[in-house]
Length: 458
View 1 (cartoon, one colour):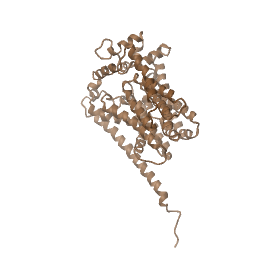
View 2 (view 1 turned 45 degrees about the vertical axis):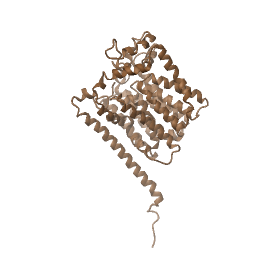
View 3 (view 1 turned 90 degrees about the vertical axis):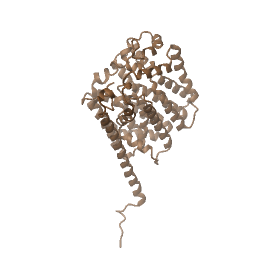
View 4 (view 1 turned 135 degrees about the horizontal axis):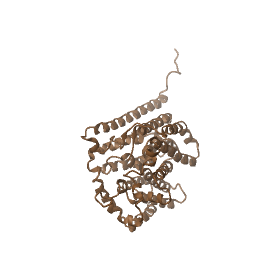
């Protein structure tokens, strides 16, 4: 009697395969559940009488309107996606670290530009920051920065004389002064403002890679790199000032991580520079004080508080300078809360947005990140210092949940939460290598579909 040894799998060999198939099935189920959540938010919006007037969105839960379209980016964006899918994973493994960081920035910039140009130059780039809601509406009226700061809070409320446009009123003066500065050095107009936002905003990809390498491992950063570049969030990152805010806060986190892990020689100076960027972050957007949760996640992952005194010292000049100039941050914030409920938030129902905001993020992070977040919650061998990665991703999730529960984020969270959802991207390192290109393709298809079917204006 003979037995066949070539057709039957050894139990020890078949077990990892079964586990892999089971993991893939769970990934698909997670993506399906996320799709149902998004679909539920779309359908639930129809239950509101006069939905557009109640939710103040034309295509809930997203801020945009349905208009299938195409433009120059229709050719460029798929080309960028194909290059990243075909060559990104291999290049991320092979090139020198410094080259990978630069390539991450360049690739993210190419992806952001090409997606923005799907809407054409005027609608997708030049006019984005010039609408009646935006910062450039107020730039020409700033003649005395000192007087502007002293009277800034007095112009926040809707019934104030010469009140600020919504986005100026909704942020501390650092955001407006950035675009005033660009105008004063000759980079005036919507085209230059958009170029600034896209160029600076896309550097957030490099900041994420630097942070993951410092806190986790270089291998983990390399595995996550193609997903950081090809993030669907670029649909919103490249066309709103929040992309710029995202980059500033991301580099603050990256420098803190380098300081905390002593990944640079001048750790104290690096912590001081991190504090300078955290301080600037506070004067770009009130909501970005929540990045303190990300800073806490970095310190927990690195198991140290050494950088804290130096980071606080770096933040001090911003608070001291703006306060001395006549703008008190806390007064500005409390006045903003009043202005917030004078506008759309007054009628937008909390009961809908508290979960529909999260549904909107399904589109922002894409299907690959949904699967990766599922894996982040499950113990998995193969990556060293796995706990640090989990803590970092958890920091981003805590920021999202805190912003959601606060009631100060009713809609438009696709762009507002970019500084938080950025830190979910490193979880993509947990996806199995054999399926990386499939997941990258899903990310690209998701971004291209949204960008070609909806006009995501502000």
